[in-house]
Length: 51
Image (cartoon, rainbow, N blue to C red):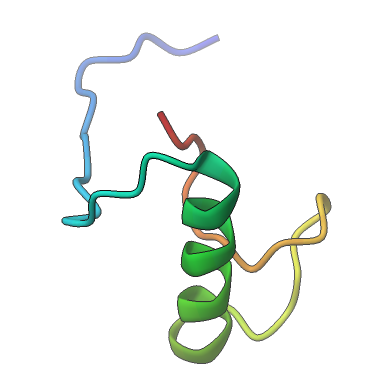
């Protein structure tokens, strides 16, 4: 396995205390702007993790 030298955090610039609503919002936005096809989990989200 290769060594990880850098880690990039991306801030979504939204305040959404309900994680399910946040994920739905990301999914809708990414479906229209970034990823037309769903990933293996059934989402269009481009992020590896949502923290």
